[in-house]
Length: 468
Ligand SMILES: *[C@@H]1O[C@H](CO)[C@@H](O)[C@H](O)[C@H]1NC(C)=O
Ligand SMILES: *[C@@H]1O[C@H](CO)[C@@H](O)[C@H](O)[C@H]1NC(C)=O
Ligand SMILES: *[C@@H]1O[C@H](CO)[C@@H](O)[C@H](O)[C@H]1NC(C)=O
Ligand SMILES: *[C@@H]1O[C@H](CO)[C@@H](O)[C@H](O)[C@H]1NC(C)=O
Ligand SMILES: *[C@@H]1O[C@H](CO)[C@@H](O)[C@H](O)[C@H]1NC(C)=O
Ligand SMILES: *[C@@H]1O[C@H](CO)[C@@H](O)[C@H](O)[C@H]1NC(C)=O
Ligand SMILES: *[C@@H]1O[C@H](CO)[C@@H](O)[C@H](O)[C@H]1NC(C)=O
Image 1 (cartoon, rainbow, N blue to C red):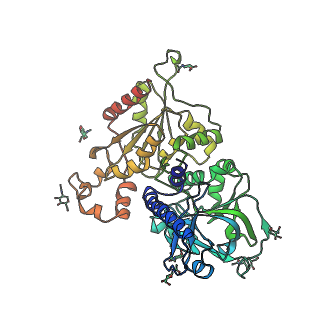
Image 2 (tube, rainbow, N blue to C red):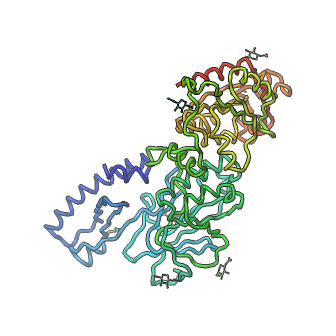
Image 3 (cartoon, rainbow, N blue to C red):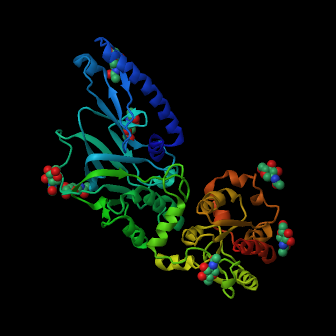
């Protein structure tokens, strides 16, 4: 069991399977090794791989090499193969290095001391150096181009090249970038806050954050979160001229899926993350109103309509509000702001959240338990991103999810294009022109005017969900 969880923490299913095979091979070889120990012979020329599974916190693979057998006969001098960097995950590369770590921030270089007998493993490759971009959106070449590369270099203590320490730290460090798409609330969470939580919560605040591409916006906006995760002031390593030394460093952030956590890869869940935010922002309301509860008589469920002011505007939000009030809701129409202590309190008072597909829906993380989200999906082949970005995450957060796909007559695009225009043809040529063409029409030029009587049915469903 322990073996399983250790693996599950740091490796994907695929890799687990691969290591499983290695382990099986290892046990065969251990048996073979025992045979050899009792019947030593000198001229054995094949490398003997002795896989020993440690039940401790990390996986150590011990390698017996040719030379040790050749020169020292049957003695068991071992070289250690440590998995240092996991570069096989789809969303982020993460290196986790123990020992003597020396960070030269202004050169974006991280040195770690190796001993002559040590070999390091990257997947199945032996490697001593890595170049890592510590931002969790590896598959997006455009954004990764904006992220500073951290060079990680192994060097022997005695050799030159390992710089002297100017400042010694006793806590581990975590290196991450606040560049990329940071500034967009959705990306703030999916690329940064959730990965940062996943990577750092284990240290209970006793961890030093080292930030590259530092953006004052981000550290200000998420001050409360950062202070909850780390007891120390963030260090801007791009402008750090001294050599900082740590007993352990993690470069890059763990990330599994869009705006969520894969509980098969972590012992934390989105429920834990939401609980963490609730504590961080002192959110009082644990659960939504229960309309079955007689004693709540007189109280009305709160409906928040997220209004967007630039793109994908809800043109008849006022009509929507009157209809919802007739159904018994208290309605607020608001654009979510930048002041998170205020936004999070507002979200925490909400029972039903309505919004057109967009970053504002990210604020669902602050909703109380059992809240209902209604995502309005504009025209365009948007079901896929609507599902990945918000539907799946909402369900992972144990929130109720409803969606409302608009019909062409609810889209402002119908004022510019006729109903039989190729832009409405989901198998048509526009969809083959890629994201930028798609975005400029469907995400940037489209507003929504709801068919109120059709939308009413979705609100009735939401009311039903509040009767628990
Ligand atoms: C082990 O020795 C064999 C034969 O001398 C050689 O081909 C092989 O590359 C060596 N392997 C290692 C890991 O040094
Ligand atoms: C070692 O890492 C470097 C830098 O990431 C990479 O260019 C190189 O191909 C790697 N070597 C092996 C054998 O994996
Ligand atoms: C940091 O620690 C190393 C090893 O213990 C020591 O040699 C060095 O003098 C220390 N440097 C500072 C600035 O404290
Ligand atoms: C980095 O800091 C060192 C030590 O202060 C300094 O000598 C060097 O010029 C700096 N390099 C850059 C690129 O700023
Ligand atoms: C019913 O509502 C009252 C007042 O809001 C609350 O104190 C009580 O815990 C609720 N009971 C249930 C079963 O939800
Ligand atoms: C809009 O289109 C839908 C389905 O295509 C239709 O049921 C509805 O009556 C139309 N509404 C208006 C106001 O034309
Ligand atoms: C949609 O576009 C495809 C490919 O261009 C075309 O074959 C198909 O006839 C179009 N459908 C409509 C309804 O225009």
